[in-house]
Amino acid sequence: MKMKIRLEGDKEIARNLKAMGRALTRKTLKPIMRENLQPMAEDMRARAPRGSGELADSVRVSDRLSKTQRSKLERIAPIEMYVGPGPLPQAIQEEFGNVRQSPRPFIRPAFQGGVDKALRNIGQQGVAAILEAPKKG
Image (cartoon, rainbow, N blue to C red; front, side, top):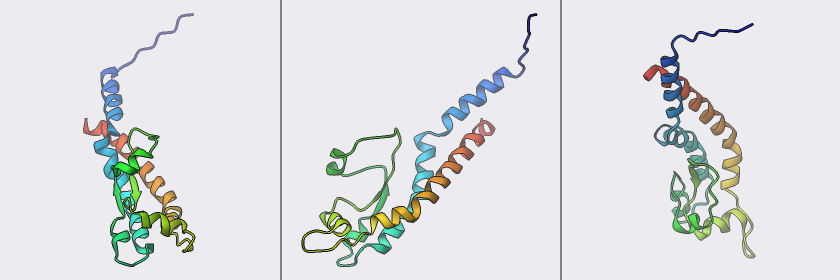
């Protein structure tokens, strides 16, 4: 027994699949990531020790790192966004302490408190972008 399948609207399906494939580009995903990582950055700024204010002011959400930070980086994804302080030695000293100072973490608590919500929202907004893509053409 032979089976026949007739597919109607194949051009429209192909167009929709192509649009969905283009939906999560850097242009689409970076703003979603930036928006959802911003609360974590604000929490880090609020928790950062206040001396000169330089440490808190250096906390950013960005897709770029300093030359030193890049040299220690092992990329794990085609699109990456970073949240945290700039390349200041006092950031490491505050977070982990040293022989003269106890640790006063401000990065890890903010990360632990915000990562689940950020990931959930990035996922939901990414899926929404994919589902919206065929409608936009």
